[in-house]
Amino acid sequence: AQTVTQSQPEMSVQEAETVTLSCTYDTSESDYYLFWYKQPPSRQMILVIRQEAYKQQNATENRFSVNFQKAAKSFSLKISDSQLGDAAMYFCAYRAFTGANSKLTFGKGITLSVRP
Amino acid sequence: DTEVTQTPKHLVMGMTNKKSLKCEQHMGHRAMYWYKQKAKKPPELMFVYSYEKLSINESVPSRFSPECPNSSLLNLHLHALQPEDSALYLCASSQLGLPQETQYFGPGTRLLVL
Image 1 (cartoon, one colour):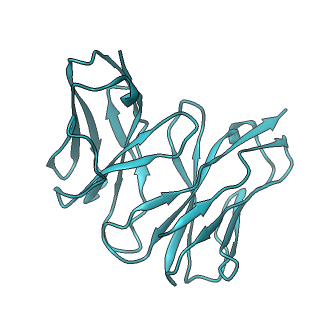
Image 2: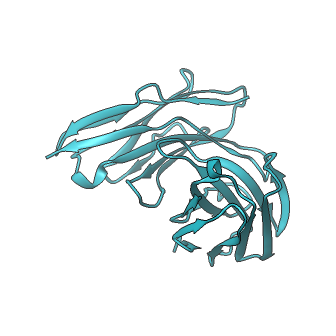
């Protein structure tokens, strides 16, 4: 079974600084997707970034980028120029490549606070 | 447009009540999902519908009854719930067929069972 581990329950970053959120996973599959979702307090869960395991290039979305290390099964999220609106709970998630009903496996999440 | 809508936003119900949660998407997605989320925890999958047919039931108690009337709508019927069922209920949808299977979430219904 696949597992996703987010070992740090909380992190804090100064506004305008850079922060990296860690995620590791375990799978026997060779092809899969990895995701970072953001859930602000009492607000909607939104997709931040997606990475296909077969792509060597790390995904980037504006201030958000990932460091995908397939051999190490590591998928960290880097947030550059942190903003107050980045304060949220962040979930790392895994989905197998095959199967129409592949489930999302979530990590426990990390709460990010941004200091003004 | 990646919008999934859910109604109501908040719901308070007694243990003998019957209520329904509604979810709607107009993205042409053919998979829809119900999740339960407790505070500060990740979402837990409850049900998956693919092409309007129930494809996954994660051993959810029968007091939760899902329904998918058409490809855009998903309901969750609630009956005789327990206080421990109080949670945020999230709906999500996704396209079927790789690589479009990214799940998009609605804002959720916050349920309180008294």
